[in-house]
Length: 210
Image (cartoon, rainbow, N blue to C red; front, side, top):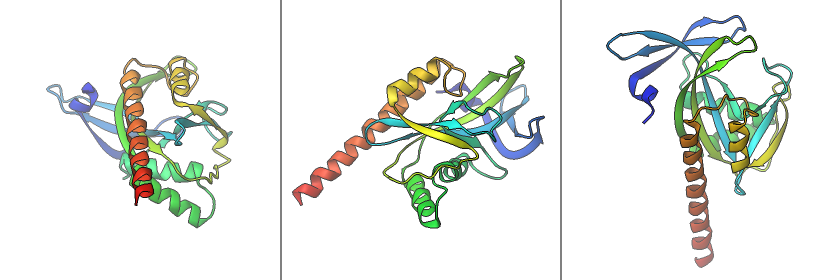
């Protein structure tokens, strides 16, 4: 089990803002030292289709890192749980069309969003300064055909095979600095995809029989 998950409790309340205007959240360490560390609290999701391809975004100009490749990701807002933040980001980034599209996307996420690992990661900015992130990862297999991207945040998107996405993360080409703990995350994502496909295939067989 992730040592971070065992040892800390996250309190999702705004602590301060950094120089880039991002919200920093307080993490209270439940240890003998009673130390406190600050993490940028975020969420990220492997959004997949039935063919096992993952939606990878090319970030738009309003982001702090425009032009980079990323999963569907975002910051946790004040008083949100990670799951609430992930549902909001999914709807905002990929389903910004009419209210009907947004409602369908929200319902899909509520029903199918699957929580994976949570990781504490240290990234380094362009000046080599370390930044601590707490990222809750999710997986979601989508059946929605309509995608309406939020153009000020997402320039375009690609459907890329699952294993290829894992390799892009290993190579540092998607907006994460690789950590060996990602291998467990990759395995959890594979298992989620296999489980969803088996469940869908069983439902299709039952429908044909009936």
